[in-house]
Amino acid sequence: MSQALQQEPRSKVRWVVAGLMWSAIAINYIDRTVLSAAAPHLQSEFHLGAMEMGIVMSAFFWSYALLQLPAGMLADRFGQKIVLGMAVFWWSLATAVTGLASGFKSLVALRVMLGVGEAGSYPSNAGIATRWFPRQERATVAGIFDSGSKLGGAVALPLIAWLLAVFDWKVTFAITGALGLIWCVVWVLVFKNSPADHRRVSASELAYIRADEEAPREGGAALADVPWYQLFAHRNTWAMCIGFFMINYNSYFFITWLPTYLVKERGMSMMEMGFMASLPLILSMVVEIFAGWASDRVYASGRLSLTATRKLFLIVGLLMASSIGFAAFAASPLVAVALLCVAKSGTTVAASQVWALPGDVAPRNMVSRVAGIQNTVSNMGGVVGPVVTGAIVASTGSFVAALLFSSALIVIAMLNYLFLLGKVEPIQFNQVPMEATNRDERNADVRA
Image (tube, helix red, strand yellow):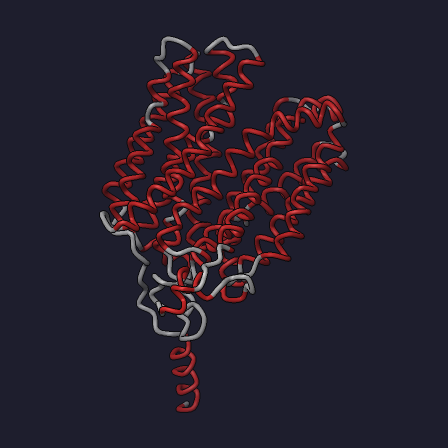
Protein backbone atom coordinates (compact mmCIF):
# COMPACT_ATOMS: atom_id res chain seq x y z
CA MET A 1 0.00 0.00 0.00
CA SER A 2 1.45 3.35 -0.96
CA GLN A 3 2.32 6.01 1.61
CA ALA A 4 -0.40 8.30 0.19
CA LEU A 5 -3.05 5.66 0.81
CA GLN A 6 -1.74 5.03 4.31
CA GLN A 7 -2.07 8.74 5.14
CA GLU A 8 -5.55 9.11 3.62
CA PRO A 9 -8.39 8.67 6.13
CA ARG A 10 -10.08 5.32 5.54
CA SER A 11 -13.83 5.57 5.03
CA LYS A 12 -16.11 3.03 6.70
CA VAL A 13 -18.86 2.64 4.12
CA ARG A 14 -18.63 -1.16 4.37
CA TRP A 15 -20.12 -0.98 7.88
CA VAL A 16 -23.11 0.96 6.53
CA VAL A 17 -23.54 -1.92 4.09
CA ALA A 18 -23.30 -4.36 7.02
CA GLY A 19 -26.10 -2.44 8.73
CA LEU A 20 -28.30 -2.79 5.65
CA MET A 21 -27.53 -6.53 5.51
CA TRP A 22 -28.45 -6.88 9.19
CA SER A 23 -31.71 -4.95 8.86
CA ALA A 24 -32.74 -7.03 5.83
CA ILE A 25 -32.43 -10.23 7.88
CA ALA A 26 -34.22 -8.67 10.88
CA ILE A 27 -37.15 -7.65 8.65
CA ASN A 28 -37.00 -11.11 7.07
CA TYR A 29 -37.67 -12.77 10.44
CA ILE A 30 -40.31 -10.27 11.50
CA ASP A 31 -42.24 -10.94 8.30
CA ARG A 32 -41.99 -14.72 8.56
CA THR A 33 -43.10 -14.63 12.23
CA VAL A 34 -46.17 -12.41 11.89
CA LEU A 35 -48.34 -15.34 10.71
CA SER A 36 -47.59 -17.34 13.86
CA ALA A 37 -48.77 -14.49 16.10
CA ALA A 38 -51.85 -13.85 13.95
CA ALA A 39 -52.73 -17.56 13.59
CA PRO A 40 -55.60 -17.56 16.13
CA HIS A 41 -57.24 -14.62 14.31
CA LEU A 42 -56.84 -16.34 10.93
CA GLN A 43 -58.18 -19.65 12.21
CA SER A 44 -61.22 -17.93 13.66
CA GLU A 45 -61.99 -15.79 10.60
CA PHE A 46 -61.44 -18.49 7.97
CA HIS A 47 -62.54 -21.50 10.09
CA LEU A 48 -59.20 -23.29 9.66
CA GLY A 49 -58.41 -26.47 11.55
CA ALA A 50 -55.03 -27.29 13.07
CA MET A 51 -54.02 -29.38 10.05
CA GLU A 52 -54.90 -26.61 7.58
CA MET A 53 -53.04 -24.04 9.68
CA GLY A 54 -50.02 -26.34 9.77
CA ILE A 55 -50.03 -26.55 5.98
CA VAL A 56 -50.22 -22.76 5.72
CA MET A 57 -47.21 -22.39 8.01
CA SER A 58 -45.11 -25.04 6.26
CA ALA A 59 -45.78 -23.62 2.78
CA PHE A 60 -43.17 -20.92 3.43
CA PHE A 61 -40.35 -23.33 4.26
CA TRP A 62 -40.64 -25.48 1.15
CA SER A 63 -40.38 -22.62 -1.33
CA TYR A 64 -37.74 -20.92 0.83
CA ALA A 65 -35.51 -23.99 1.02
CA LEU A 66 -35.89 -25.15 -2.59
CA LEU A 67 -35.10 -21.74 -4.09
CA GLN A 68 -31.86 -21.06 -2.19
CA LEU A 69 -29.64 -22.31 -5.01
CA PRO A 70 -31.53 -20.56 -7.83
CA ALA A 71 -31.43 -17.33 -5.80
CA GLY A 72 -27.68 -17.73 -5.34
CA MET A 73 -27.17 -18.33 -9.05
CA LEU A 74 -29.14 -15.19 -9.90
CA ALA A 75 -27.15 -13.14 -7.37
CA ASP A 76 -23.86 -14.34 -8.86
CA ARG A 77 -25.10 -13.69 -12.40
CA PHE A 78 -26.87 -10.33 -12.04
CA GLY A 79 -25.35 -8.91 -8.87
CA GLN A 80 -26.53 -8.82 -5.27
CA LYS A 81 -27.98 -5.31 -5.49
CA ILE A 82 -30.80 -6.22 -7.83
CA VAL A 83 -31.39 -9.72 -6.42
CA LEU A 84 -31.52 -8.75 -2.74
CA GLY A 85 -33.46 -5.58 -3.54
CA MET A 86 -36.06 -7.52 -5.55
CA ALA A 87 -36.16 -10.26 -2.89
CA VAL A 88 -37.01 -7.80 -0.08
CA PHE A 89 -39.52 -6.01 -2.29
CA TRP A 90 -41.18 -9.31 -3.25
CA TRP A 91 -41.49 -10.73 0.27
CA SER A 92 -42.58 -7.37 1.72
CA LEU A 93 -45.31 -7.11 -0.89
CA ALA A 94 -46.39 -10.69 -0.14
CA THR A 95 -46.58 -9.80 3.57
CA ALA A 96 -48.45 -6.53 3.03
CA VAL A 97 -51.15 -8.08 0.82
CA THR A 98 -51.77 -11.03 3.15
CA GLY A 99 -54.53 -8.90 4.63
CA LEU A 100 -56.39 -9.41 1.35
CA ALA A 101 -56.41 -13.21 1.77
CA SER A 102 -59.83 -14.79 1.45
CA GLY A 103 -59.20 -18.24 2.86
CA PHE A 104 -56.98 -21.31 3.01
CA LYS A 105 -55.82 -21.42 -0.62
CA SER A 106 -54.89 -17.76 -0.83
CA LEU A 107 -53.00 -17.97 2.47
CA VAL A 108 -50.97 -20.92 1.17
CA ALA A 109 -50.22 -19.06 -2.06
CA LEU A 110 -49.09 -15.94 -0.19
CA ARG A 111 -46.84 -17.96 2.13
CA VAL A 112 -45.25 -19.61 -0.90
CA MET A 113 -44.68 -16.12 -2.32
CA LEU A 114 -43.07 -15.08 0.96
CA GLY A 115 -40.68 -18.05 0.76
CA VAL A 116 -39.81 -17.23 -2.85
CA GLY A 117 -38.76 -13.73 -1.86
CA GLU A 118 -36.94 -14.56 1.35
CA ALA A 119 -34.87 -17.23 -0.43
CA GLY A 120 -32.68 -14.47 -1.86
CA SER A 121 -31.58 -12.96 1.46
CA TYR A 122 -28.83 -15.19 2.84
CA PRO A 123 -27.17 -16.17 -0.48
CA SER A 124 -27.04 -12.49 -1.46
CA ASN A 125 -25.59 -11.45 1.89
CA ALA A 126 -22.86 -14.08 1.62
CA GLY A 127 -21.87 -12.69 -1.78
CA ILE A 128 -21.92 -9.10 -0.51
CA ALA A 129 -19.63 -10.05 2.40
CA THR A 130 -17.04 -11.34 -0.07
CA ARG A 131 -17.22 -8.26 -2.29
CA TRP A 132 -17.27 -5.64 0.45
CA PHE A 133 -15.13 -7.06 3.28
CA PRO A 134 -11.57 -8.34 3.51
CA ARG A 135 -11.07 -11.92 4.66
CA GLN A 136 -10.12 -10.84 8.19
CA GLU A 137 -13.54 -9.19 8.70
CA ARG A 138 -15.87 -11.72 7.10
CA ALA A 139 -16.74 -13.66 10.26
CA THR A 140 -17.58 -10.35 11.96
CA VAL A 141 -19.94 -9.30 9.20
CA ALA A 142 -21.41 -12.83 9.04
CA GLY A 143 -22.12 -12.62 12.76
CA ILE A 144 -23.65 -9.18 12.33
CA PHE A 145 -26.05 -9.97 9.51
CA ASP A 146 -27.09 -13.39 10.89
CA SER A 147 -27.72 -11.85 14.32
CA GLY A 148 -30.58 -9.96 12.68
CA SER A 149 -32.52 -13.22 12.68
CA LYS A 150 -32.31 -13.44 16.48
CA LEU A 151 -33.44 -9.86 17.01
CA GLY A 152 -36.22 -10.31 14.46
CA GLY A 153 -37.38 -13.48 16.20
CA ALA A 154 -37.09 -11.99 19.70
CA VAL A 155 -38.92 -8.72 19.04
CA ALA A 156 -41.40 -10.00 16.48
CA LEU A 157 -43.87 -11.67 18.84
CA PRO A 158 -44.25 -8.81 21.36
CA LEU A 159 -44.24 -6.21 18.56
CA ILE A 160 -46.82 -8.08 16.52
CA ALA A 161 -48.92 -8.85 19.60
CA TRP A 162 -49.06 -5.10 20.32
CA LEU A 163 -50.01 -4.32 16.71
CA LEU A 164 -52.73 -6.96 16.80
CA ALA A 165 -54.10 -5.45 20.00
CA VAL A 166 -54.11 -1.90 18.60
CA PHE A 167 -55.17 -2.76 15.02
CA ASP A 168 -56.66 -5.83 13.38
CA TRP A 169 -54.60 -8.62 11.75
CA LYS A 170 -55.01 -7.14 8.25
CA VAL A 171 -53.46 -3.80 9.22
CA THR A 172 -50.70 -5.64 11.11
CA PHE A 173 -49.63 -7.47 7.94
CA ALA A 174 -49.68 -4.17 6.02
CA ILE A 175 -47.48 -2.40 8.58
CA THR A 176 -44.87 -5.17 8.78
CA GLY A 177 -44.78 -5.41 5.00
CA ALA A 178 -44.19 -1.66 4.75
CA LEU A 179 -40.93 -2.02 6.74
CA GLY A 180 -39.32 -3.90 3.87
CA LEU A 181 -40.61 -1.50 1.24
CA ILE A 182 -38.97 1.40 3.10
CA TRP A 183 -35.74 -0.64 3.31
CA CYS A 184 -35.82 -1.10 -0.49
CA VAL A 185 -35.75 2.66 -1.06
CA VAL A 186 -32.69 3.07 1.18
CA TRP A 187 -31.02 0.06 -0.49
CA VAL A 188 -31.40 1.46 -3.99
CA LEU A 189 -29.99 4.83 -2.93
CA VAL A 190 -27.05 3.56 -0.85
CA PHE A 191 -25.76 0.21 -2.10
CA LYS A 192 -23.47 -0.59 -5.04
CA ASN A 193 -22.45 -4.09 -6.12
CA SER A 194 -18.78 -3.14 -6.01
CA PRO A 195 -17.18 -0.81 -3.44
CA ALA A 196 -15.19 0.63 -6.36
CA ASP A 197 -18.44 2.11 -7.71
CA HIS A 198 -19.45 3.80 -4.46
CA ARG A 199 -18.51 7.47 -4.43
CA ARG A 200 -18.08 7.56 -0.64
CA VAL A 201 -15.59 4.69 -0.51
CA SER A 202 -12.11 6.16 -0.21
CA ALA A 203 -9.13 4.75 -2.09
CA SER A 204 -7.65 3.55 1.19
CA GLU A 205 -10.82 1.66 2.17
CA LEU A 206 -10.99 0.07 -1.28
CA ALA A 207 -7.34 -0.98 -1.02
CA TYR A 208 -8.00 -2.42 2.45
CA ILE A 209 -11.00 -4.42 1.21
CA ARG A 210 -9.02 -5.86 -1.68
CA ALA A 211 -5.69 -6.40 0.05
CA ASP A 212 -6.07 -10.17 0.32
CA GLU A 213 -7.57 -10.85 -3.11
CA GLU A 214 -5.89 -13.57 -5.11
CA ALA A 215 -6.96 -11.97 -8.37
CA PRO A 216 -8.71 -8.74 -9.36
CA ARG A 217 -12.50 -8.75 -9.43
CA GLU A 218 -12.91 -6.43 -12.38
CA GLY A 219 -10.80 -6.74 -15.51
CA GLY A 220 -8.75 -9.76 -16.44
CA ALA A 221 -10.01 -13.08 -17.66
CA ALA A 222 -13.11 -14.55 -16.05
CA LEU A 223 -13.35 -18.28 -15.55
CA ALA A 224 -15.77 -20.14 -17.75
CA ASP A 225 -18.93 -20.82 -15.78
CA VAL A 226 -18.83 -24.07 -13.80
CA PRO A 227 -22.01 -26.15 -13.37
CA TRP A 228 -23.19 -25.86 -9.78
CA TYR A 229 -23.33 -29.62 -9.27
CA GLN A 230 -19.56 -29.86 -9.72
CA LEU A 231 -19.26 -28.17 -6.32
CA PHE A 232 -20.34 -31.50 -4.78
CA ALA A 233 -17.13 -33.11 -6.01
CA HIS A 234 -15.37 -31.27 -3.19
CA ARG A 235 -15.45 -32.52 0.40
CA ASN A 236 -15.79 -29.04 1.89
CA THR A 237 -19.16 -28.56 0.18
CA TRP A 238 -20.44 -31.73 1.83
CA ALA A 239 -18.96 -30.79 5.20
CA MET A 240 -20.57 -27.35 5.11
CA CYS A 241 -23.98 -28.80 4.21
CA ILE A 242 -23.93 -31.65 6.75
CA GLY A 243 -22.72 -29.46 9.59
CA PHE A 244 -25.21 -26.68 8.98
CA PHE A 245 -28.07 -29.21 8.72
CA MET A 246 -27.29 -30.39 12.26
CA ILE A 247 -26.95 -26.83 13.55
CA ASN A 248 -30.26 -25.73 12.04
CA TYR A 249 -32.03 -28.82 13.37
CA ASN A 250 -31.17 -27.53 16.84
CA SER A 251 -31.76 -23.85 16.06
CA TYR A 252 -35.33 -24.42 14.92
CA PHE A 253 -36.21 -25.93 18.29
CA PHE A 254 -35.93 -22.44 19.77
CA ILE A 255 -38.51 -20.91 17.41
CA THR A 256 -40.91 -23.88 17.24
CA TRP A 257 -41.06 -26.14 20.31
CA LEU A 258 -39.38 -24.03 23.03
CA PRO A 259 -42.60 -22.23 24.13
CA THR A 260 -44.41 -25.59 24.44
CA TYR A 261 -41.46 -27.09 26.32
CA LEU A 262 -41.39 -24.26 28.85
CA VAL A 263 -45.15 -24.40 29.45
CA LYS A 264 -45.78 -28.16 29.33
CA GLU A 265 -42.51 -29.57 30.65
CA ARG A 266 -41.37 -26.78 32.97
CA GLY A 267 -44.77 -25.52 34.17
CA MET A 268 -44.35 -21.86 33.25
CA SER A 269 -47.23 -19.46 32.78
CA MET A 270 -47.72 -17.82 29.40
CA MET A 271 -46.22 -14.55 30.67
CA GLU A 272 -43.18 -16.33 32.11
CA MET A 273 -42.78 -18.31 28.93
CA GLY A 274 -42.86 -15.19 26.76
CA PHE A 275 -39.96 -13.66 28.66
CA MET A 276 -37.91 -16.83 29.09
CA ALA A 277 -38.31 -17.91 25.46
CA SER A 278 -36.88 -14.59 24.26
CA LEU A 279 -33.76 -14.81 26.46
CA PRO A 280 -31.84 -17.37 24.35
CA LEU A 281 -32.48 -15.34 21.19
CA ILE A 282 -31.45 -11.99 22.68
CA LEU A 283 -28.33 -13.38 24.34
CA SER A 284 -27.27 -15.34 21.26
CA MET A 285 -27.50 -12.22 19.10
CA VAL A 286 -24.82 -10.50 21.19
CA VAL A 287 -22.70 -13.66 21.42
CA GLU A 288 -22.76 -14.19 17.64
CA ILE A 289 -21.44 -10.71 16.86
CA PHE A 290 -18.71 -11.09 19.49
CA ALA A 291 -17.74 -14.55 18.20
CA GLY A 292 -17.39 -13.27 14.64
CA TRP A 293 -15.27 -10.34 15.82
CA ALA A 294 -13.10 -12.54 18.06
CA SER A 295 -12.42 -15.10 15.32
CA ASP A 296 -11.40 -12.34 12.91
CA ARG A 297 -9.00 -10.95 15.53
CA VAL A 298 -7.46 -14.39 16.03
CA TYR A 299 -6.98 -14.90 12.30
CA ALA A 300 -5.65 -11.37 11.72
CA SER A 301 -3.08 -11.85 14.50
CA GLY A 302 -1.44 -14.64 12.51
CA ARG A 303 -1.43 -17.03 15.47
CA LEU A 304 -3.72 -19.50 13.68
CA SER A 305 -4.36 -20.29 10.03
CA LEU A 306 -7.78 -19.62 8.52
CA THR A 307 -8.59 -23.35 8.70
CA ALA A 308 -7.58 -23.62 12.37
CA THR A 309 -9.51 -20.45 13.25
CA ARG A 310 -12.73 -21.60 11.58
CA LYS A 311 -12.52 -25.06 13.14
CA LEU A 312 -11.67 -23.73 16.61
CA PHE A 313 -14.73 -21.47 16.77
CA LEU A 314 -16.97 -24.10 15.17
CA ILE A 315 -16.01 -26.69 17.77
CA VAL A 316 -16.21 -24.28 20.72
CA GLY A 317 -19.66 -23.20 19.55
CA LEU A 318 -20.85 -26.78 19.08
CA LEU A 319 -19.54 -27.81 22.51
CA MET A 320 -21.70 -25.03 23.93
CA ALA A 321 -24.64 -26.14 21.76
CA SER A 322 -24.42 -29.70 23.11
CA SER A 323 -25.62 -28.41 26.49
CA ILE A 324 -29.16 -28.71 25.12
CA GLY A 325 -28.93 -32.34 26.25
CA PHE A 326 -28.07 -31.32 29.83
CA ALA A 327 -31.15 -29.08 29.93
CA ALA A 328 -33.28 -32.23 29.83
CA PHE A 329 -32.02 -33.19 33.31
CA ALA A 330 -31.91 -29.72 34.89
CA ALA A 331 -33.38 -29.69 38.39
CA SER A 332 -35.16 -26.35 38.01
CA PRO A 333 -36.73 -24.36 35.18
CA LEU A 334 -34.21 -21.54 35.64
CA VAL A 335 -31.25 -23.90 35.27
CA ALA A 336 -32.88 -25.41 32.20
CA VAL A 337 -33.32 -21.95 30.63
CA ALA A 338 -29.71 -21.05 31.47
CA LEU A 339 -28.47 -24.20 29.72
CA LEU A 340 -30.70 -23.47 26.73
CA CYS A 341 -29.23 -19.96 26.57
CA VAL A 342 -25.76 -21.51 26.41
CA ALA A 343 -26.93 -23.98 23.76
CA LYS A 344 -28.52 -21.34 21.54
CA SER A 345 -25.50 -19.07 21.92
CA GLY A 346 -23.31 -21.98 20.87
CA THR A 347 -25.22 -22.46 17.63
CA THR A 348 -24.64 -18.78 16.84
CA VAL A 349 -20.91 -18.99 17.60
CA ALA A 350 -20.82 -21.75 15.01
CA ALA A 351 -23.08 -19.77 12.66
CA SER A 352 -20.64 -16.85 12.60
CA GLN A 353 -18.17 -19.24 10.97
CA VAL A 354 -20.75 -21.07 8.85
CA TRP A 355 -21.71 -17.87 7.05
CA ALA A 356 -18.08 -16.87 6.52
CA LEU A 357 -17.22 -20.23 4.90
CA PRO A 358 -18.90 -19.61 1.50
CA GLY A 359 -16.65 -16.61 0.93
CA ASP A 360 -13.65 -18.64 2.09
CA VAL A 361 -14.12 -21.68 -0.14
CA ALA A 362 -16.18 -20.59 -3.14
CA PRO A 363 -14.61 -19.55 -6.43
CA ARG A 364 -14.82 -15.76 -6.74
CA ASN A 365 -17.85 -15.83 -9.04
CA MET A 366 -19.81 -18.54 -7.15
CA VAL A 367 -20.07 -17.34 -3.54
CA SER A 368 -23.85 -16.85 -3.56
CA ARG A 369 -24.32 -20.26 -5.21
CA VAL A 370 -22.27 -22.03 -2.54
CA ALA A 371 -24.21 -20.15 0.17
CA GLY A 372 -27.47 -21.17 -1.53
CA ILE A 373 -26.49 -24.84 -1.58
CA GLN A 374 -25.46 -24.75 2.07
CA ASN A 375 -28.68 -23.00 3.11
CA THR A 376 -30.89 -25.35 1.08
CA VAL A 377 -29.61 -28.35 3.01
CA SER A 378 -29.61 -26.52 6.35
CA ASN A 379 -33.25 -25.55 5.97
CA MET A 380 -34.14 -29.19 5.46
CA GLY A 381 -32.96 -29.48 9.06
CA GLY A 382 -35.47 -26.76 9.88
CA VAL A 383 -38.22 -28.67 8.09
CA VAL A 384 -37.37 -32.05 9.61
CA GLY A 385 -36.44 -30.91 13.13
CA PRO A 386 -39.85 -29.79 14.41
CA VAL A 387 -41.50 -32.93 12.98
CA VAL A 388 -38.98 -35.33 14.55
CA THR A 389 -39.12 -33.49 17.89
CA GLY A 390 -42.92 -33.68 17.85
CA ALA A 391 -42.84 -37.40 17.03
CA ILE A 392 -40.38 -38.13 19.86
CA VAL A 393 -42.42 -36.12 22.37
CA ALA A 394 -45.64 -37.81 21.25
CA SER A 395 -44.15 -41.29 21.62
CA THR A 396 -42.32 -40.74 24.93
CA GLY A 397 -44.54 -38.21 26.66
CA SER A 398 -41.67 -35.83 27.45
CA PHE A 399 -38.92 -33.72 25.86
CA VAL A 400 -36.01 -35.64 27.44
CA ALA A 401 -35.33 -37.99 24.52
CA ALA A 402 -35.89 -35.17 22.00
CA LEU A 403 -33.28 -32.94 23.66
CA LEU A 404 -30.80 -35.82 23.94
CA PHE A 405 -31.28 -36.59 20.24
CA SER A 406 -30.59 -32.94 19.41
CA SER A 407 -27.39 -33.10 21.47
CA ALA A 408 -26.31 -36.28 19.66
CA LEU A 409 -26.66 -34.51 16.31
CA ILE A 410 -24.39 -31.74 17.60
CA VAL A 411 -21.73 -34.38 18.35
CA ILE A 412 -22.01 -35.58 14.74
CA ALA A 413 -21.63 -31.97 13.58
CA MET A 414 -18.42 -31.65 15.60
CA LEU A 415 -16.95 -34.80 14.06
CA ASN A 416 -18.01 -33.54 10.63
CA TYR A 417 -16.18 -30.21 11.00
CA LEU A 418 -13.14 -31.83 12.59
CA PHE A 419 -12.58 -34.58 10.03
CA LEU A 420 -14.65 -34.02 6.86
CA LEU A 421 -14.00 -30.29 6.54
CA GLY A 422 -10.58 -29.99 4.95
CA LYS A 423 -8.34 -27.01 4.40
CA VAL A 424 -10.39 -23.82 4.19
CA GLU A 425 -9.33 -22.37 0.84
CA PRO A 426 -11.00 -21.55 -2.50
CA ILE A 427 -12.22 -24.59 -4.44
CA GLN A 428 -10.15 -25.08 -7.57
CA PHE A 429 -11.57 -26.23 -10.90
CA ASN A 430 -9.58 -27.39 -13.90
CA GLN A 431 -10.94 -24.52 -15.95
CA VAL A 432 -9.43 -22.28 -18.56
CA PRO A 433 -10.27 -18.58 -18.81
CA MET A 434 -13.50 -17.85 -20.66
CA GLU A 435 -11.59 -15.69 -23.15
CA ALA A 436 -9.43 -18.65 -24.12
CA THR A 437 -12.47 -20.92 -24.40
CA ASN A 438 -14.20 -18.51 -26.75
CA ARG A 439 -11.01 -18.03 -28.79
CA ASP A 440 -10.56 -21.80 -29.23
CA GLU A 441 -14.17 -22.12 -30.38
CA ARG A 442 -13.68 -19.36 -32.96
CA ASN A 443 -10.46 -21.01 -34.23
CA ALA A 444 -12.25 -24.33 -34.54
CA ASP A 445 -14.97 -22.69 -36.61
CA VAL A 446 -12.36 -21.15 -38.92
CA ARG A 447 -10.57 -24.50 -39.40
CA ALA A 448 -13.89 -26.17 -40.13
